[in-house]
Length: 205
Image (cartoon, rainbow, N blue to C red; front, side, top):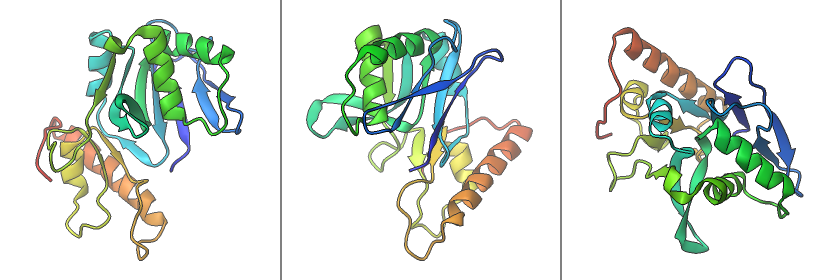
């Protein structure tokens, strides 16, 4: 899994980090993000190919937007995948304040911890968790690179998805540096599509 970084979409904003009892970094942004800012957290093995969903999140007044999943130990609960998510500046500050006073258990997963905090302080109705792409949900805009496919094409992915992670398990014969090469190819493909003024659109891949 890639190491995560968090950026505030404001020139004057800064970022900092807190640690759980296990020493795991948990992003927080007290004093760094203003109410009107948007904070985007992204793992180093994840490509953000389109920011349309981030702009849409702000327009719709959401506190958090990410791809989501059902929590295995509690099927009625959903949480965010931690590879890439966006928060409003106010939600980031409120969640940071709540976590500052919380007893965070050892090995607390960042995605579940942050998502729960935002839901608690902002309300579940202001959190949007999209289903990622699966064979049963071909409209999903979040996906993982298919290391087992010989026909996986960076341009198809760049055209079809907003967020693509290359941090999923790869076959033994695929070298580690392939992740970097795929991410570069994905970004180049998206830039090429942008230069042609081709907007992202869903295709079945």
